[in-house]
Image (cartoon, rainbow, N blue to C red; front, top):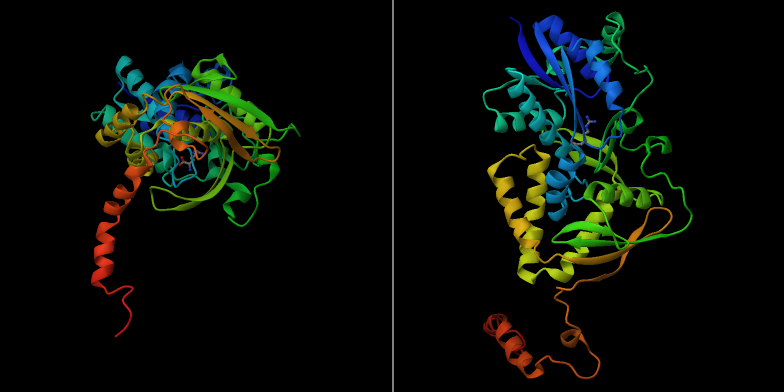
Length: 400
Ligand code: ARG
C-alpha cells in the first residue's frame, strides 16, 4: 500500500506540482488541505484544482474565525512587530495551517505532512517546527526543497502533466495574503534600491482624497467596536483594513533578517494590522500601570522574534502570551484615529472607564489633589546616590 501524505495546498504552481510529483516520485497518496485564512480566494475552484492535479481527497477549512481569535488577538495584544515593523502576517498563518494538517493526518491515517515551501525562506521553518511540536511522530515532506526544479522547469512540469495552473511565465511576484495583511516578494523588488511599482499593491491603493476618521473600541485588549457598532473580530479587521487602506495607509518596505540567515527585501501592506496596533498601543498608554507597561514593552520584541521564527507552539511563546494576556484585563476603552490621504495616520484621542489618567493629579491649572509637599523629600532621596557620588568626585568644589 502506498503511503499517505497531507499537503498544505494553496492552488498555486508549486503546491499543484507537489501533488502530482509526490504521487509520481514518492509513490504517496496526497490529501490536499486548503485553509481559508482570509486570503479572499475561491476555495471551490481550489478544491477542484487539487483533485485535477491528482489528490485523492481535497479538504477546505474555513479558519477565518480561528485565525482572528487564536492568532491575531494574541499578537495584537503583544503589539507584535518583527524588527519593529513587520506585523507577522505569514508567521501566524503557518502554525494555524499546521493544526489542520495534523488533524487531517490523524483523521485519514497519514504518516506525513507536506508543504510547498522552498529551502530559502521562513515559512519552511514555521511549517516544520510547528509540525514537530504538534506531532513529533509525523514525517515532513517538502518537495520543493528536494525536487531541484527552478521556476521555468516547474512550469514545464505542470504543462507536461497538464496540471490545472493559471500561472503565466510573466507572473513575477510571490504573494502571501491573509486577514492580517499581504506580503509581496520577488521580481523587481529583489533590487533593494528599486522603488516598489504601484501595481504590486492591492490593499493600500488610495481611493479617497479625504481624511478618514474612525473610533476603535477595545475590551480587555481586543477590538470589539468600530464607530460605536459591535463587530466580530474578522469583520472588524476587514472593515478597518478597507477604511485605512483607502487612504494608502499600511505599507511597509524593509530589509528583513530571515531565520535562515538571508537578508531579504520585503514589501507588505497591512492597513488593519498597523492601524489596530497603533490604537492598541495608545490605549495601553492610558490603561497599563507604569512598570507593567515598561516590562511588556521589553518582552514584545522577543515575542515577535519567537513567532517569526516559527516557535508558536513553544513553551516560551505560550508563557509570554500568558503574561501578555494577564496585562490586558483593563485595556478597555476607545481610540480615535485619523488617516490622512497619502498614508499618514495619527491618534487623535483616547478614553477608558478604567484609565489611569487622573486630571486632578495631572493638571497644572488651579486646585489639584497632588501632595506637593511630598515631592521635595521624594526627589531628594531619589537623587541621593548621585549626589553622594558627585560630592566624592569633588564636583562643584573650586580648584585649590
Ligand atoms: N518574509 C515574510 C515572512 O517571513 C513573508 C513570507 C511570505 N511568504 C511567501 N510564501 N510569499 O513572514
